[in-house]
Image (tube, rainbow over all chains, first blue to last red; front, side, top):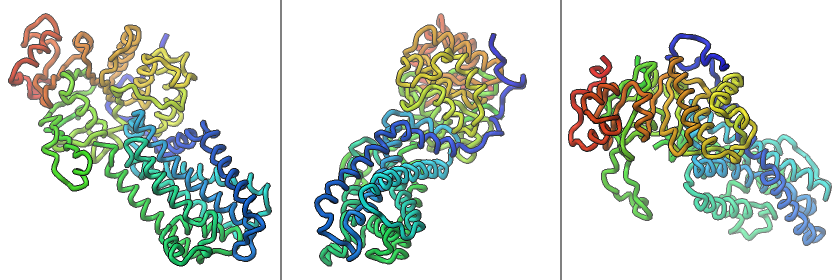
Length: 270
Length: 269
């Protein structure tokens, strides 16, 4: 005995008008996607950061003092937190999009009435959540190694969110552009990795020769790490306000690009 | 207001220049014309068949209705909603079963349907989801991961995903390709019930006996043009042949379309 198919005997000639936005579900799905494989998406980057910490702290602790007052291990921890956040915020939307494109299930996001703003917001927020989750886990593990001050928590939160926002947006753009995993690897290996490693994760740029100091100032990732560190130590290579301005500007430009690509259906709708 | 309306729709896929040439902006030729001035109306409650050989433009036509492709010329609408300017309502009105067997390997069947329902803004939809699962023989697979399902079961989930927001218009793009007799029977029973309940069905298939048994009206596409459009019985009577397959072969071998049947209004009257 099967129940009736429709609540009315009138022919169905209109879509359901009581429906809301699809944004919360797309966000939840993107969160579930990485949470279901948390061992790979959360635990693995924490272990990687821990290995960096063990090696560099063992070699350099006691030999290097940064800003004249900060021990090297304490200096290193915010850098590793930020590097992990950046890489994972990038990985979340980019891997989701490329996997969906290659397996073909991206069609399930394209068929519903989701606007480009809803799609952008869902992928971006999920990237920020994953980035922050990894950052918090790295912090929880790392504070077992040394005492880490937290001078300005507000700056820490602002730069963490904006940095994840930048990389989440960049991951979204990379995911839209890439047609196969090779394309995404180009982004990761030739843009994201050099930009994060050469941005002051492991050192203060004041220890660099003038030429490389100048080059570092053109790397927006440097400002995310420098501003983030200011939140812990109240000391930084450049003013946190300057970093905030650069980071906010870069996010605004990338977000505009990503929204325009989504609105145009770039590589999504033929 | 028709359930589906296409007015002079054409689609040209631009040719893609490979390698370094695309960076130099060199022209890659005129592109591929998948649809050429297609006009068509499907009324509410119809069971409509869209037939044609591979590459005729069937999937392109469906993609334009679903918003996956943009028409180069002309207008398309679903339940009176333009698929470009009023895309949100047009997509709410349309459920599409894609041709390819695609799924998200992260989720169970029930999660997949809840997510798809949520994309349409329907978050408390479990009663309808349970009904679809029951009617498509998926109830005992509701908590199985998509990866663990056979091809036929995955095909059923695709159908369920298209129905989850209870769309007035349902498009089935070769839904029975490569599936067993049991699924075909279950699927057609369920789809026929939906059609009797008022849903408009648009079907593409290469199994012409299915189209002959189910569809009240049929359009045939050839090289992006409609070459025949009429009720199934009228087509058979006009072209001759023992069945729809025979009629299909005869029409596809003709050089000119069945001109008398090409006006949708005329065919509907």
